[in-house]
Length: 181
Image 1 (tube, rainbow, N blue to C red):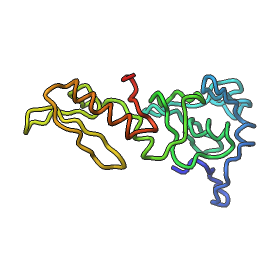
Image 2 (image 1 turned 30 degrees about the horizontal axis):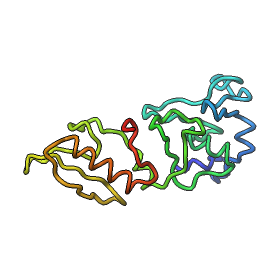
Image 3 (image 1 turned 90 degrees about the vertical axis):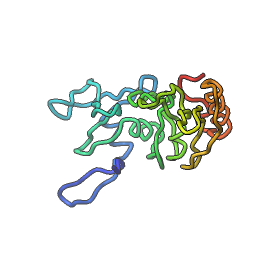
């Protein structure tokens, strides 16, 4: 989704949402990450009401002039006056936490360094899985879309430590996984 433009049905040209237009309609509190309507634009958009809805994926979305935007991208644009070049990463992995201190610009590779344990993970540790063929714990890490093997371990904790050591060295954008501090 190119969320830096608005659809103009009369000309089929997509004018750019300006920071001026955004600030005319909404106020953003960088301490809470919450947007509020400054004016009433309809029955559902009343002056003083909190803006945005969760569309089931955790991200909050806001519709302005018939165009939908992710709230975290609007927060960046509202504050910095330009659209982020790539992605916006939530430091704490909470997709609805759009406090300014919690969001940061990230390349796609950087954004993949900030991850949580997957729901199908059976080891309980990021970067560690059971290798049936040798009956040991395998530690691995991804760097630039390539899987790097870190070794096989008899002990789950040692495999986890190998992953954390490699993460600190290779993932400088997010060197420690959330919850592992």
